[in-house]
Amino acid sequence: MDGETNALRFRVGLVECVAISDGSFTYPTANFFPGAPPAALAQAFGAAGVPEQIISPYTCLAIEAEGRWVLLDTGAAGMGPTTGHLRTNLETAGIRGSDIATVILTHAHPDHIGGVIGDDGQLSFPEAQLYMTKQEWDFWSEPDLLSRLPRHLPEVARERQTRTFQSRLPALRGKVTLIESETEVARGIRVLLAPGHTPGHAIVELTSGHESLLYISDILLHPIHMTHPEWHPVYDMDREAAEKTRCHVLGRTTSEGMLVSAFHFRFPGLGHTRSTGRTWSWEPVV
Ligand SMILES: [Zn+2]
Image (cartoon, rainbow, N blue to C red; front, top):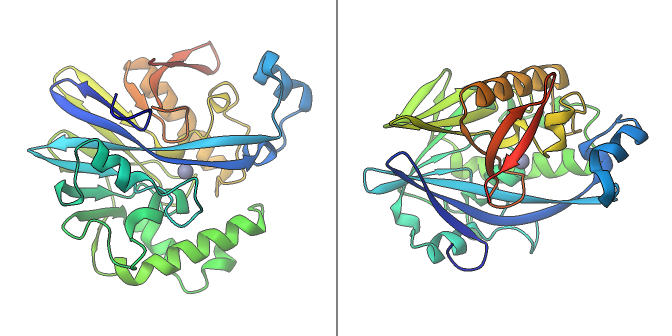
């Protein structure tokens, strides 16, 4: 463990990885489980009771590749003092900005692209090759973005999402490699399409020897979404597609015994998924 609980080094096969905290942000519980029957929600939370708010961690992942690093997502710089600590925590873990050769932006939500630029408006990792899916880029870079966001999304989120992407757009334009299908961006590191949460949402698979990890980004926002994949968070843009993708990914991580890196789960967000019959459960790696 580096520092307190802000960076955790581990290996997948022969490859070194570091789970890096960017911070956390507080959400109304209702936004994570809208439409969940109160009795079932109470049962899902158990003895601790249903909280009014959920403090959702933001944990990025750095993967070593040929002496440099591939960074998955950039955290939420710009969303307030509880976020935006990625750069500091990377440096504490011994990874300088110039060591980042590749940045994969899994989707364009503020907690994943916020840190792509610094306070000066310039790219945080100017030497890095940036990747995003073309589907994601095309959706967010339309000028009438605000009107394209789904109506079930709360106003505050619509406004924040629009403002965050549009403020990063000038720095990103022409700098992002857009991918349209499954792509290997470095040896053993593949970007896979997993749409639903956003139109071009991506996840990242790492394979080394007989071991594999799946960075699932926002396929799941909370472990309860494993037990109840149908309780779509309001942040899922296409709820039907998101649920389908969620179930497909969980089926795969479970059957293949993959290590899972979940951006919004309790730090370090690492664990395995287990089948409970019709749905799944989470076994964190402690
Ligand atoms: Zn997120």
